[in-house]
Amino acid sequence: MRITPELNERLTRVGPGTPMGELFRRYWIPACLSEEIPEPDCPPVRVRLLGEDLVAFRDSAGSIGLLDAYCPHRKAPMFFGRNEECGLRCVYHGWKFDTLGTCVDVPTEQPDSKFRFRVNMKAYPTYEAGGIVWTYMGPQQLTPPVPDQEWLRAPATHRRVSKTGEHCNFLQAIEGGIDTAHSSFAHNNDLENPRLLRNLDRHPRLEVEFTDYGFRYASLRNVGNETTYLRIYQYLMPAQQCRGFFVGLDGRQPELPGVFGHLWVPIDDEHTYVYNTLYSMDDRFPITDEWWEEHESEMGRGKDENIPGTYWLIRNQSNDYLIDRQVQRTKTFTGIQGVNTQDFALQEGMGPIVDRSSEALGSTDRAVLACRRLLLRAMDDVEAGRTPPGTDPEAVAEVRGADALVPHGTDWKDAAKTMTLAYWH
Image (cartoon, rainbow, N blue to C red; front, side):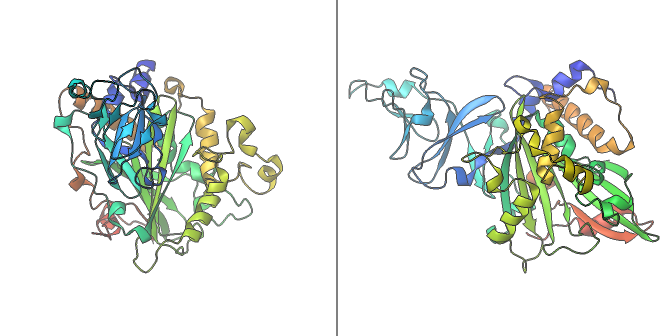
């Protein structure tokens, strides 16, 4: 499938009224982390989502509002508003709005005035689960049920989520996430150890299968005379991936059997928030604060790796991700610290929106092509008045990624019948 400049525009533009923007608006998507508005009447936070400027706040009763960033009176910024007594009050003239966008007080009008009943502001519904504030930005009459993925059902002690900002279009971030072949190169952080699984076979065989929630694909690497390294990825519409974390790079089971995931959420055409999830697949293995922080630091997105007070990395384009050429020559393939940072250096380095019309794709790009086909079909569905795939939470309730060492000749689809069954119900 050749991506023309016109198709590239269709695939990447996410603002209101664009085909991709309208597709995203048919799903519940993350708006912010719960930790950003941690308690009732705490300060509101700015949210930019699908090219729209919004403000999120938690009211006195704990309910969450996601409103237009600007007061409908004179368009003053609601970020500076007073979060008080179950409403957000604009500090310019005191107009106050609840979490539904209803105007509940206009103190500049006469006490007997009915004016406030004619005023409201844009507000999107919210749902809180898994440490994330979710929102639905599409037609109210088409609102799907709220998400019910396995990681959301895992106990809070057994799941974690983080968030990182990326300076590029969401699609090239997704395509990096579902590209399994690059891990043998970009994420080779031990040049002296040729026995790492991803280095034993640098040309994995990929097989893709479309599903009613998106697609799944298998990466198969020959890592021994009788052994195949099988990794099954799941792609959940519109922009989510999960993959296994059961086999370490050295072939041993890691200390925490779990499932990784990413949700890629467009801020606008040229910026993306990546929500990173991990949950334990065994109730005997909770995820401690210490373990999680160490893991996030190794990935290059720990708290100390962020610009203070933000979710944006200190290692970024402005300083060439602090690449160390000596480390690149002797220790790691890139010389850049952190798997996450390595991905960002390459994905952001393509430019804000990559030109796909001049690509040369190979056999390990099958998942990338599947993703593009799926998104193009889904946009066609929305434009034709059909329901896009993956809006039914039952379709993904039992879905997870998996990986394992299996005998040569194993049918991955047969293996998936047990390997990808949910643990938490």
